[in-house]
Image 1 (cartoon, rainbow, N blue to C red):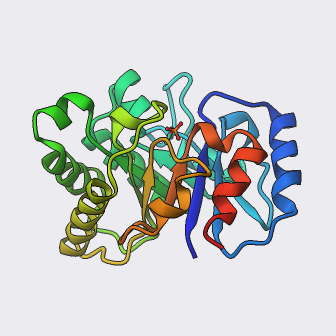
Image 2: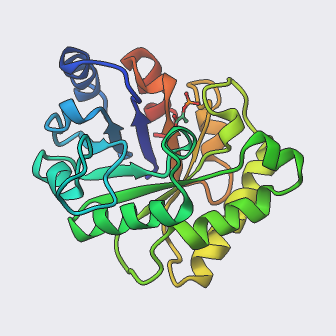
Length: 234
Ligand code: PEP
C-alpha cells in the first residue's frame, strides 16, 4: 500500500473536484489516496479519497484575519493538512519552528499533518542538502508525539520544474529521513517523495527504498494524469 497525495495548490473549483471524484470512484486501488484542495472544497471527501487542506494557522482562534484554524479544517470534513510546503516557506515565511506549531495544531484537532521538508537550489549547490533535510525533520516534526503523521521530502528546486533528483539522491534523502525519524522515536512514519512526479516516473520513484508514496502537484489536477500515478503501483 502506497500513499498518493495530490496538492491542487490554488487551482480548481467545486466542479473540478466533482469531476475528479467521478473519475476516482471508477478505479480499484489498495493505495491511500488524498487530495489536498483549497479551503473552499474541504467537504468533498468520500470512501475512496480523503480530503486535506494545504496549510493551517499556527494559532487556535482569534484576531488572525484570513487564517483558517485546524479546528475549522477538521470541522469542514478534512482529514489531512499539508504543512511547510515549499511555497508557504517561500511566500509566507514559514520556518521549521512555525511548521512544527502548525503540525501540533493539526494533531491536536485530529488531522494528519503532511510535513514537507527539502532543500532549495542554493542549498543543494552549497552541499547542504543532507543537513537541511535532517534539520527540517528534527525541527519541523513534533517529537513528543506517537500520533499519525506523514513526511514529504520535496526538493524545492524540483517542484513544478519538470526536474527530479536521481534515484540514488532520492534514496539517500529518504534513508536519512527514515533514520532521523527512528532516532526521534518515530520509526515507521510514512515518507513521501514530491516534485515533478508524473505517470511515467511514479512507479520507478515508488520502488526506491523508504519511499512510501508520492505528493503530486501539477499532475494531480486532471484525472487523466492523476489516475495513472495511483494505479502505477497497484
Ligand atoms: C507540490 O506542489 O507539492 C509538487 C510536488 O508539485 P509538482 O508535482 O507540480 O512538482
